[in-house]
Length: 232
Image (cartoon, rainbow, N blue to C red; front, side):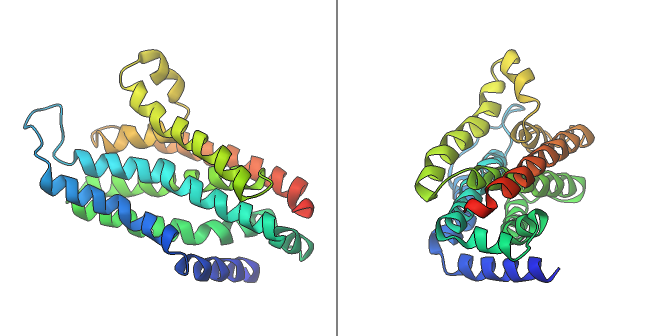
């Protein structure tokens, strides 16, 4: 527990000193708020009055934290911090929780802001928060996997951006193509879109799929941490 707390504290301090990363947590809800209150939305059954809120929330949870998390891990590798932590006996889950914990906390706060902008309440608020928090966790772990496999920050940027674009925009394409929709069903980003775009949808399957994503990605991270930690 001490290792997790120490890593979490270090990461929190580093994040609070990084205005670029902090801006990421503000820019998505800010855009959602501005567009919701300035762009006229047609009144029909096919377009939700919270279209911009749910759209920006899905992008934030599915893509926003992926690049940030991967960059943090790559920076630890580049500086040799990861190698030091492995030698010091920090276990994979301790490093992952400590490093990703602040991202998840900040992401949860941002999700609440989205919910307030969208004026979600009751079951809508619960479903929204559950899918956002679990989706954010999956995004962070995927970012950690990409970061741990990268040699440095330059390499991680070249890898993280294409992955973010693919998993972020595939659900959008899935809305127009049934074949893509079936294939995208295994992605956590697709499950985020299912709920934020239709609060009447059942929550069990989306959360189960996201949980499976988290489990698989965590196993990959643990393997990579043990394999590459001493080389970092």
